[in-house]
Image: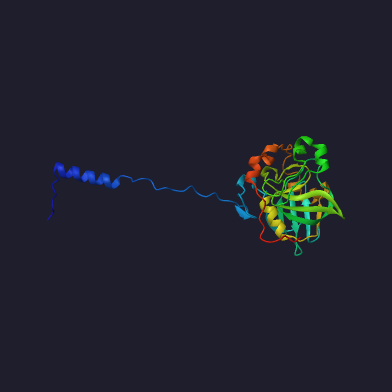
Length: 264
């Protein structure tokens, strides 16, 4: 037997009201914005009391990131092999493997050539422009002739490796930088720049003294023609003294904090 339910106008209205209430949306839940994703090895890090932000993907496109593999260059083990034309630095290990880092190099005519030896390495070092920098580009470096202490404001970034020839300081450095755009390009006064993340990584991998080889143009063409002359030449970046030396900049900075005395 089929049972037939007869809906009065009042019953039908009550049913519709209940259905509408059941389908009505409540307040939207609070959803936190998704955390940004970073290329492995380039996310936020804490170092010496500083919180370094991750490096955006746009600066790490293609080969412009740290990679490990088999070394195919011409230098011996325990060497840093720098190709200023392809903008790479290779840490060559005894087993024939390497870590390749993207670097920024000096503008035309300003890069170090030949060989050198790393005799010192420093965490969060201070910086003072050389006499040559003051002479050739006083508009860029003149305001900083008294130097900048180690920390977030220092142009040498999180780590620096000091290049010598014999007992003579060449005044060239392999160092970190906050100028992300310069990595993979030519734009420095001659030093070899690295992402701070890569400078920290390399610093922890090497001992001093260590040989540094700078490839000549012919060697770069012979070993890595695919990446020869990678990147562009950037104009000198002029930074306001107020940005690095003003009261607000000093108030926001502080000396690095190390867990123990540094031994080099």
